[in-house]
Length: 228
Ligand code: ADP
Ligand code: ADP
Ligand code: ZN
Image (cartoon, rainbow, N blue to C red; front, side):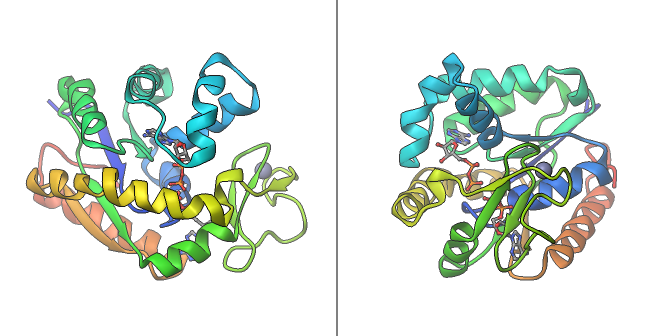
């Protein structure tokens, strides 16, 4: 039975998953669950989880599965995820994908996996110009999606560049993506859940494309549908 909707956004670091997930959550009435964001929160507050994740995060390596899976499981049990969730940054390897299947099995499993495609050179430009709001995590880009002033448009918070968005770490993150995460494309394709989205347009164009794909999915996959 599919009483909950689980979307998994796939794509290289910088492909636009977080940006699209932030917009999608209002339209779908489902929360964005970003593992990167949860790690950043824990790093900022120097919790046990943060201390554990720090060295992996700083190098652009994956935080160990056991920790990450437990963290997602707890997040999906929270009340705001009672209808499902938009997963952004999880799963990132096959072990995590299988764990997600188990976690969601009682609710019909994962419903749809939009894959945002973008060339590596564009991805690199996107990542190196990325800035985040320290208070509300809103994502900006110094050239492509700048704030109106110096501070966050939404909350007036300070903007900063992630440590792992500096060029030294970006190469390794792309390597980790191709080696560990890209096999998930085949994994979800084989399950008939993958939908490809061209990540090269404007934020608005991609959002429309994405909503169109989800709507089409709704018609094709009756009973396991995403409400749009
Ligand atoms: P991006 O948005 O650029 O893809 P994220 O914010 O999703 O980056 O992730 C930042 C870092 O957080 C990763 O490089 C990794 O260290 C850690 N992380 C995020 N999600 C996961 C995950 N599913 N498994 C392990 N580590 C993760
Ligand atoms: P991911 O979550 O996949 O790592 P983000 O959503 O954080 O990617 O986007 C990476 C960077 O690219 C951010 O600085 C964001 O503002 C910018 N960005 C996202 N989508 C687009 C787009 N369609 N066109 C131009 N820049 C974009
Ligand atoms: Zn803000």
